[in-house]
Image 1 (cartoon, rainbow, N blue to C red):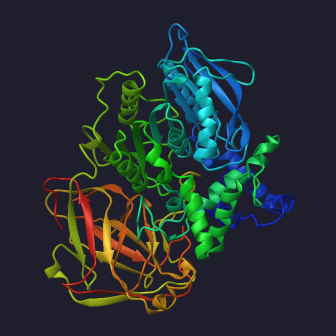
Image 2: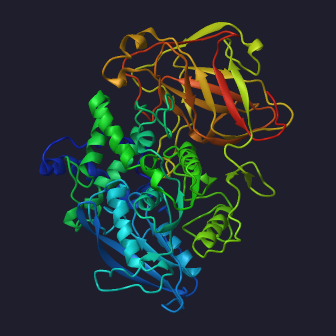
Image 3: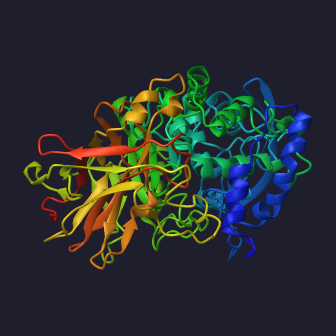
Length: 632
């Protein structure tokens, strides 16, 4: 990326892009000036990924497979869409010697030519799998507008590709495949792998086509309503509930910009990619969802429609139809799709009897996803054999695609530990959640204590400003190789509680912390029952690690926005999942803040008081994973 592009310029582009509800021609004119401003940025950085950050590595020797470019016109919802694909055929594979197939596609904004997408297909072809890599609908040279991995559109399109792998149809040029292992006449043995946008498509496809035999979705979502507008309070199903939370404006704006810029980056696009409701390249429902989020208002009727749509294109709504064995891989460093999303998917799949296991790897969308920790899976390099996650993926496909029934597919739950320097970097557990729970109590004097009897009576107050006063992250900074200021909270706009130093052994946490709170906010009580849910109070909960020298770390810059369901009652906030070691001498600090620069916040000034007493105070529950961990 050009060093002349500043953090401010990126923020300006991401936050200001919004297409009004006007005619298609007018909306194009309104959008193009902002999109042109960002064209160089998009073309010269890793913005147009996830899982597409690195260029393909140069081959050291001729590959043991051939690659054939194809076009396939498939039915997707009520449209015919032309899909741009590459077919990887291993040497020696033919009708007499068939092989299982692997289907893979790109992250949002990418294509079949992205480094990790192409490298993934090549890595499996080199291991004897037939691979079909394709550009998702609305990306690369594939047709039709972006429909957010809708199972009835994107899923149906992928089902048409499975027909091709079954030999039941040809590509547009007449190419037919007769060398994929079959379980029945029209049933090829096929697995899917990919990340982010290329992760959700797997579950969308498996929900509408039960011929899929194995899934490996990486760093993807459970519920887009939560991903884009998270509310970590009032959860009723999956990761979220009936009321939106705090609009994740930087991530959402960035991906909207990527989608709308497709026409400028690819001026000869298929006309079928024209969008609806005033957007250039998104389907109408996605466009209207973005417009509602930008408005900052949540009237009941429009909000219900938005939530219904966001969930209809999310696994939370169709996992009941997913029967394919699923290996979930989610990233600890991920503020876009956090660990809670994979955990919700895992719980649903296992509860209904679908075979599923889960790995929490180190990297996700945040903090430079193109630089995995040493020894971690790097799809752009195809290091399946030499990484823990890669070996688990190979075992998964051995078991479910090669039908090697004796293959050990690993433990139910595994998690990367960044503090391990010798020995296995991954901890494992036979179930999720793993370990036990440690409770800490919010004392009126600002301490976190380990026993209710130690709670001091007291009340403290904070209030929000009309501008953000806390900072967790600039959401796309890591992806764009930009500096990101350290997290901060301005005095008077947050409250914090700090524990005693850890003593004895380190305290290891792996799982989803939660906190039960009660706040007092008379101004919130006056407006919280209005027809617009945006009038309810929003707060941001988070956990810091405080070193002996006073320096602090917001673990993976994770925060939990929460729209308080009722300011007169207790409520529970589920924080983002994390894996972290609190070393001896370190302290844990719990913070609730009035705002965060990466999110939309409160409407109006709403002072908040938190009162503590031994018999009635806030409680934090930490998921600890040691038999005898250190203590505060």
